[in-house]
Image 1: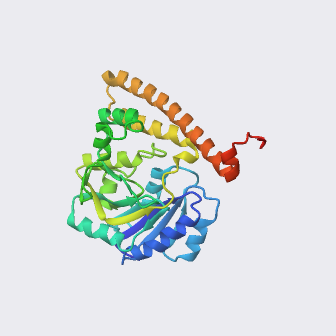
Image 2: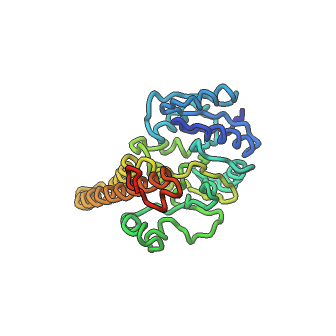
Image 3: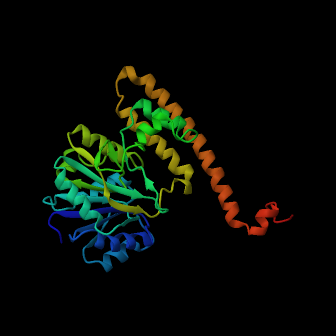
Length: 310
């Protein structure tokens, strides 16, 4: 196995995505990295099958669903301390040939890069904005209020950096769905903040790296596909409130002073209202989609009631 590179991923019943992740990883690099599966309680047998099928794969049971960042931290502690680079990735990433070697080459060009991220594509091939600015209170509120109803608003544009050319550049933070991280940089900031159970842990990670003197570097020549996409719509009543709680934690941590208490209170109240609105909208959309999928084409046209009568 590679003496300088290891891969860690968090599994929670990943299904066939894990096999795709591992098989495409073999074509992504000429290195032979150890892969650690930090399992948060899978029940589908996929992590066990991967460990049995690949000699370089090790299954690490975390003892429960401890969240993404907490599981990554747990896995990294299991690595040889001499490992220089750690890939941190979702198990539903599909690697393009040579993509990990592109990240490693970029790391040599950027010796102060603490984290490097590839171009992340959605399942339909469209680019996901995976290299963004760190949201300040103004851009965060503007994006939260207007991002859906006015996608081209200046606060969302500044945060997402959509107008930035797809070139190798420094970003405020990189998507945690796929990162190459220098081990000294990871250790310097004690890894992920495990208080973030899900969402915003990558924003916090990138921000703390930057404050510690490291760079977050976007490398679009390296391309991966996030095959399962972003699945908040499947369980909006759980995922969306978690997202808003993490957003509050991120800003509250950066505005901790006593005189900033009214700001924190207003932020908490506003995010709570926004969360409820978002959950209601997502639940309605899910119900509408389920109705369409359940009905035959003729039923969709004629519009039966829920008892199936005309």
